[in-house]
Image (cartoon, rainbow over all chains, first blue to last red):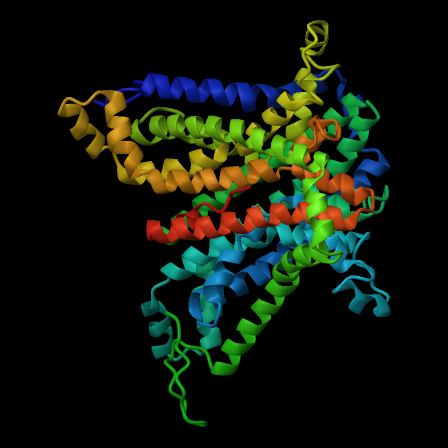
Length: 276
Length: 294
């Protein structure tokens, strides 16, 4: 077995670890376990029935579909933004770089009402789509817009440091050996960035699945059409259906844990390929 | 690395083999900026435009009416409790994790990150399950006339939950990178544990600590989903600023909703400015290694 802790001359281990574990248990672990313990009131078939009604399944499909689409767009444009910020110079670059983190700092409710005003039929951006018969706000497309906004920094901030660390020797070698610039990108640069890109994609996707604040304003929230799963949990709570809300919460928690596992594996892969 | 667009005469190509042609560069910059404009810059500007559309008088009336002031106070209160608690937690967790070797360390780091991956709605719900009327302690709390859910304590708890990881995850990699030699030297020279901590460790991590605190505070003041579940939305008493925005918006009082929202947008801009300043003082962008924030 060996010892739990290696010897150190520094004091305070017991106090620091004890406080950390106590705080984490009281604030995070015990409350989270409450959700799982409360669902044990259900039998397994009852639980399955509650979390697979047509309205709930429609909300999963929407939540996952819109989150996936937003994460794909963020992967493509996040890579582009990271590339432009690392490789090129242009006026206002420092401000643009700082503002990329805006979705981290701006409260989701503010993002929600701002995007709704912009992408509504009479909004600054929505008015250009209205004549084409495309409605963005109060439809699933609006949900996609909101999720793209909140996921925007993840890919940029995971790809950026890897791109900064790529050594120019590799690219020079590729050019010397006769590769075109495009070949160098697809065969040398992109494979190096790929683990970080996937990590950023997974982070944006995971964040989008649980998102609530920015979505509810722009979604329209029609059952079966534009109702996301977190909203369905709120709806059940408001109807005092605590058991149903908890069952859905457990489904969301399990999905969160799986995503966390995938993200940890991706980060491990990313670090390993950066070290190699 | 980056290319300086030298004014070369037309037709003469002076670029290195590892640079792209100028038209490619311009197209990529243009595409990236168009994307950021549509999804970031225009939404940000529109908050201030909509807030001031009906005039400065309407704006100031909206942010000084009693319910708005009560919401500001509650938001500040929740942050004033949640941020210091998570600061102490972050320091304790980073001290244990970065300065000592023990089993299960990676599991502990993952558990600290857990609140980031939980949906805000679920973060609020779990406290309802414990302290709500139908919750574990619900009947006991009701008997003793203590209100946690649909009251201020619930809002504070939900705010603490969603901001637990911010300061810890800034400090852990920083303190790991700094190692233990300086602290060991201090202890060998006769400093007590607390002296070592306050005179050696704390000055070494002050920028990282400030950085984490800024991000923690922004999230604490802006949290919507988790707080919404436990708040009960009672105007003037359990409404935080983001919830007040929602109420005004749902009453079609758009000018007032955007006026209050503009306060939060200003907070976001101040946060970004401070963050950029701390990063430049720190000499490196450590946040980029930890993009799993929020």
